[in-house]
Length: 291
Picture: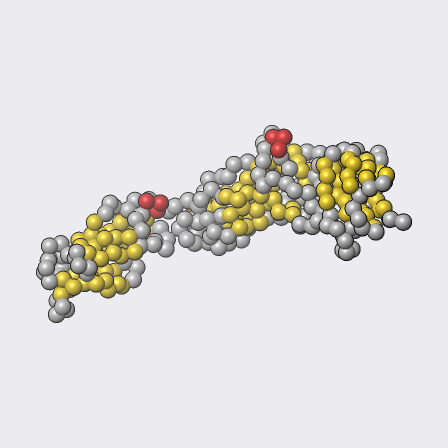
């Protein structure tokens, strides 16, 4: 019997490792199967064309040796074919799904996931969590690093997580070093601390921080079935939430943008109105009660 062979290019650098090896009987006519050793032992029957496929998913970087013999129906073994190759350390992927999570309620202002320039979102002093998906190509745990800077590149803070499962969305509590009225940027990268290789940084995401919300209820006037809303001295009002008070049965909370607005009066006995600024900070409530 002749030695088995495999076809395919040499695997180089973790990313280019083939996901399977094709084994061939190498001209022998009495082969019924292959016995392969890689990071386990495998018994593979030979197909009608004298080949078999061995899947390969490297668990970690390092040197591997593939050894293959063929056998006939009597169990006779061929000489072994061996191939040694190296799987390089693959850096973690660039994080994806960049966003800042906040507690979602009917009074939460919609915001873009990751934006820059005039489209950047603003946040108030409530809990906020920069979040992204981190993937370690080598399959092991991954540490998430979050970096915060001012818009002109001055360092604010860097924060890291404990090792996480690869492929998970990971959140970090927002830095507490923000100043009212300032614009910041943040980015993230994955770090494989086992294999000592870091991924590339994500693109920058920007956000503004507004710590001071409206101080008094909005102005509210009703004429027939129309309701007119105004800032009543509050600065920086960008919209209003209105409807049945939260937790009270009735119509769902609605939203309208603008410093002033005229809307259809909801049919509820009690109507609550909140003004908000660009960061979603809410004013005290104004209430209308139907007679």
